[in-house]
Length: 277
Image (cartoon, rainbow, N blue to C red; front, side):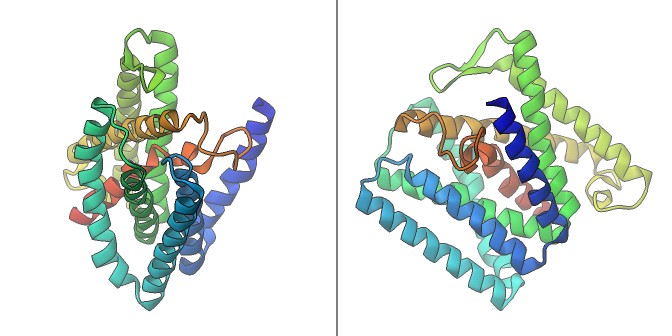
């Protein structure tokens, strides 16, 4: 199992990094679209759809992908200023208000409501991948690394100090100590980025420069908290569907959603904050 997991990571990591830094805009849009469509397919398995409804959901998801791709081809400013901005705001409301209520009340909405929720999870992420990468591939990598740092720090802090369960009915392995570890890890990561940004001009300098360090660090801590929420929400959906993984697309890792669940609230929020800044 570990060997399969490592081999999959060895293949995926160069692919993702290569696309991020080397692909042209159209290729990146298509790559992000492939991730989004795979995620929609996996989400359709978690909603409780019948076979016909699942097919209809996937057809509608493909239609959304085609419409967004055509909008990008017509002019990126159309997507960036209108569609993307609206999707980031909708995503923020969804994750800050709807998802906590969903989890606290342990709701099991109708399949159609879960399906709409899936689009609010997936398509703002697609827009964020396009928009942040357009701003700078280094900023996109820094945002993704924030989630990786939070996940790794939470794992080790939870194993060493974990005593108090965060949400035992949803994800029994997560603890409040792990969350604190994630926040501390992201804080250390943010301080390192701040020092790097002030060492010389670069893609991150406008974010941390000119007195922006403290607000940027606070924003990073908020993004880390959102990453935990994204992980919990996907776990809740899988639990409701009776599945351990969202799919078996990535051997040793589960599905695409299992790898990007923490990114789904984080990247749209980061893109919204960047646009406001």
